[in-house]
Length: 352
Image (cartoon, rainbow, N blue to C red):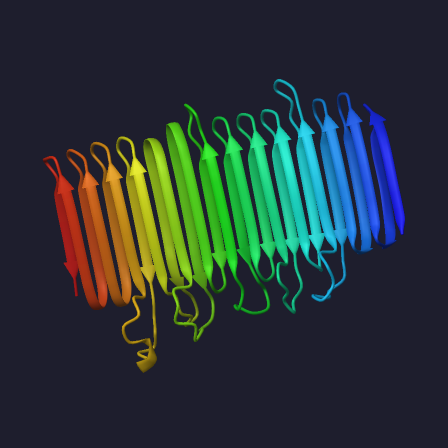
């Protein structure tokens, strides 16, 4: 076992460790900070603390492809910048079970996390939790493996978060992505992309600015799982909110889709496209493949729903003046319910 403890002031640190049970702990204070950690082996842990402007942390961990071992890649980073400090965190974890925990404070900062889990599968392959404070910060999480979990919490204006979850060897995976943003007066942007089986995406955006939420959930291959495997929940509280959701299948796969959107503001927009193909299997009878529930509160709201599949259900509630709802259902069993209060509202429903 190797342990390394370093305390640095306004200098750069680069070190590489190759062994079992690797532990690296570093602390830096000052300006123009730089830390590079490279670990190769099993049961690896890296802890970094940086306080100052223009800080950069890069951690690379390469573990062992064995689902029976405890999480072998653990990275914990805390960055505190000042004023308009531009700080960057880059995490690359491969094989084994990967855990990343990051807290970042500063303006114009960025976080990039790449996690590649076991091909065999385990309890939790990839887990990334990011907490960010400051303006115009960006977070990008990419996870490849089974049981991916990504969580982002951003507080302040004009932040962007992207979570991309997939697996390269088989569709039998579970993806969970959660983004929470408080955009204050300038709004935020959130993007979630999931490819596999059993997706769950949640986005919460608040503040008086303009918010954008985009979720894309797909299944590349067929599955016999009949329980709904793609779920999206979006909540937006601000001005000029935009929510976009795509759920479905590629290459003959199956998508069982559920979307729930709640928007409160002015000129809200919701667009949902759902696609399902149950191959007319007898055991699929009675299962709702496509389900959308949208609630909008504000003036001049707009929503469009497209459902392509066997069994379609849409529920819409617009509590607003001068709103427009469009529902297009192309499948076997179609049900559309629209509730509009106040006046000067339009509804278009097309079913076949």
